[in-house]
Amino acid sequence: MRYGLVLARACWLAAGLGACLGGCEKGKQDMYDQPRYKPFARSELFADGSSSRPLPQGSAPYSNGPFAGTSSGRIGTGDVADNAAAASATTNPYPVTMQLLRRGQERYEIYCMPCHSPAGDGDGLVARRGFPHPPSYHTERLRQVPDRHIFDVISNGYGIMYSYADRVAPPDRWAIVAYIRALQLSQNANAKSLPPELRKRLAEHAGSTSGGAQ
Image 1 (cartoon, rainbow, N blue to C red):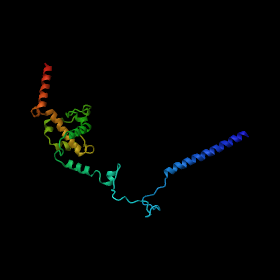
Image 2 (image 1 turned 120 degrees about the vertical axis):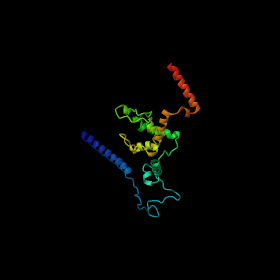
Image 3 (image 1 turned 180 degrees about the vertical axis):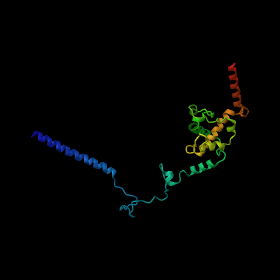
């Protein structure tokens, strides 16, 4: 008899626990399935009978989020125009500033340096491991080519170098061109064209080097 009483209590406890869990699950599901209106659904809450409310007077539509540029058509149009202008330019359309050179250096180190090396002499790490060495930027031929030639090589590829058009936007290609010109100048600058202070430092460095060699 005692066994039967224990069994009955266990059954009642299980039933109560099941009811509680069922109530929790129902409450959880209600959070998922909250009552809401579909767009333009009818509603008795408002005099016009529509659940969709008009915008407050003077408000302006605004798109936000990752798809705003494609859904609204307002974001990104300037970039398209800038890219088109840069792609059609015959010479570098941007003033050569430190900001442009830093951008060009950053893009160069990502996309060009593995083959062309930090100095632009064609002895990059990829070339050292068996890939054909690209020509040095410091040859007379490449010092004399127009800026557009370097831009076109980045855009279309040349020889075994493939196109970077899908990786580097046209404005960044011009930034790389500016940085390559800076690399060329760093290896082929005329000392007489330097400011006086730099000429003095160069002379001091040359003197210290020659003295150490003796």
